[in-house]
Image 1 (cartoon, rainbow, N blue to C red):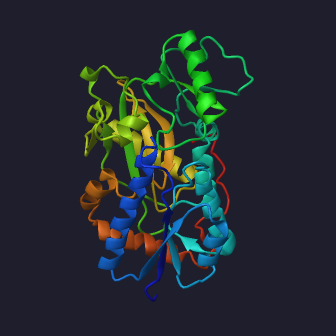
Image 2 (cartoon, helix red, strand yellow):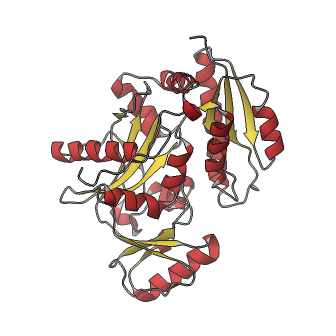
Image 3 (cartoon, one colour):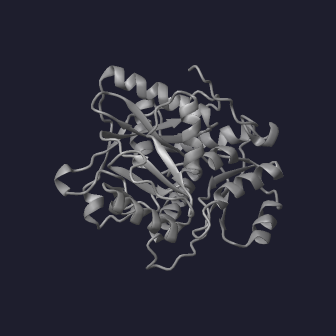
Length: 352
């Protein structure tokens, strides 16, 4: 197969420097830089295009067809993140092969209540939850306290801060109103699971649908910080904050063999259930009793994450080979329906 030509699509920054979500945009630009260097190291010809609100401009660039594969780093417009899904749908409509998860995976994963219902139907533990609309009465104690209140359809920890954890009916009602006012309905209220927050990165470098689990990562919350052990937007993005310093990511943490086996089994089932592809991350909570609760699937997580960068050498890979493999995966899908490994959602197995 000839070396495929690549078009890297990414977010064109639109937020002002003082915007609280600016950090997420800048992270994408760093990913573009690293991917560019890896493609160059692999002698893969590449061009780049920053996606903004200019749909005619995007269509004109895609219709030039001077590329074979799109390397998809687009995470949605800052003021309309669901466009992340729209872009992959557009690429599928145009018959363009691209890296990363397909549109239905992105759509389902970002709708947290839908994904959680699928997990439950497949016998996968996930925190109990209720979904509240703007007109719904707020129950006093829907899932028990503490509870976590967050937007139902955001990602990247948007809308999650220390106030997201509530311990009384009054705090619950106030937080639901806050989320509706700032992010709109519906609001997800789920039971807080005490335990270790373990993130499991999965990669498929051969387009087989059988991903490899990288070494486990943990958000190592500092109990002395006085913060709730939740991965807030500040803890994730603001490197100058106390929350960031109190929630370091540790790669290569160990688990008892039985828990490790359960993590691998459960996260691969989640990966396949939601039709993930190429690479994804499953966020979990592991209780002191060794129960694995799935919080969510993160399709197309930050491609420059420390989890991937430090995990690849342990499975005999390098970062440059990883990037090249994603391009090869996408190129191999060029002549399959919609450029995808799957074309419809898998049916949950009620008896896993």
